[in-house]
Structures are given as structure tokens and as C-alpha cells.
Image (cartoon, rainbow, N blue to C red; front, side):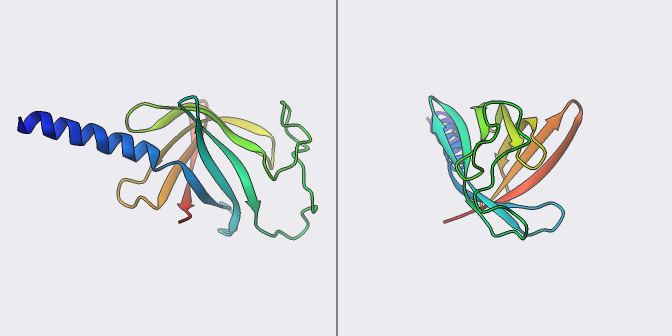
Length: 142
């Protein structure tokens, strides 16, 4: 009985961990370490997606900035509301097999993300091109 209860609690915690990715997150610029945007992660048909809901002021940015360098259906779409995270699948501990676009250069990266196991207010966001990757930490908004 203890084993069954332990397994149920473990499964519930994994599901809750995946659900905790849903919500709003502040993205941080790698170069300046300043807040860049707020991205809202949401589930649709069992997959995780994310769109930009706020842009922190940045000198030189046009008021209604668009993704001019994007090469897919996001080309010339406004940055505000732009879906940057697509099609992530939950494997029980990590969201993966999706993509993320960098509106700054238009590149699309394979994506994996997971809530930091030591502090659930951080989301690890890892973009890949081949064997190369970069990981950012996004900060949860309450």
C-alpha cells in the first residue's frame, strides 16, 4: 500500500511540475542581463506554446516592432503577441521536441525546457542547433 501511495504521489508531483511551467515568465537578455520581455506559456491540445505579451522598453526599438528577420509565418508579425515557443511535449519531467524562435535574428532552435529543481521560480530554457546549445533562465511572475 505504501508503494502504491508513493507512486501516486510521485506521478502527481511530475504532472504538477509540468503544469507549473504554464504562466508568465520574464526573459532576461544574455548580453545585458536586463529584462527583455514577458512570455506567456500556455497549453493547447496537450502541447506547450508561448507568446510575447510584454516588451520591456528598449532604446532604438520601433513602437510597433515586427519580426522582420523571421522567415516563416511569423515574418513581419508584431513582436507583441508573437508565438515564439511551439509544440513542446511533456515527457514526465521535461518539455521537449518543440521549437523557439529568436526574433532578434529569426533563427529557429530546437527546444527543451524544465522548471529548475532547486527553485521553481526559474525556468531553464535550452535552445539547440545540432550539438550546440544555450540555456537561459526565465523568472516566474506571480
